[in-house]
Image (cartoon, rainbow, N blue to C red; front, top):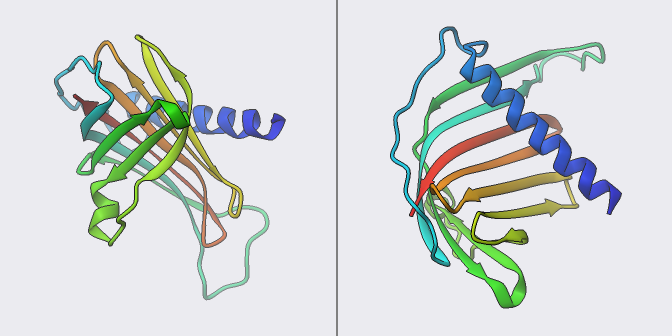
Length: 169
């Protein structure tokens, strides 16, 4: 259980740092402003559209030996293009998530995230994949429809993470 809280904290801190960097223009020059519309989300089935996305990836040069003292990070912020379908399954305490990108590569079953909070103010769900230590977190503000969905983990042995801000209704 302690490992879960550590991973959730890392996910939250990483998302906050990336968004802080975007807001202050530390990532790619001057800050970029994305306009969006807030919707109230009170249903158990919602559609979401990404407004903005930020990624943070460790880069590795496969032609040279690993550098144990450091490396390069690739950081990017852009307008979001993904879509999500969300469905709350209260009997199983799960949030079923299907992304447009996942459907595009052939996914036919939704990802199942464990509900951590489900009330009139917020919907929060997490998914931990023990095989590779990846952590996914989704938080939906039920009053505005604003949603943050992020991942912290690794890909092919390199640290990476991303966070998306979505509008859901």
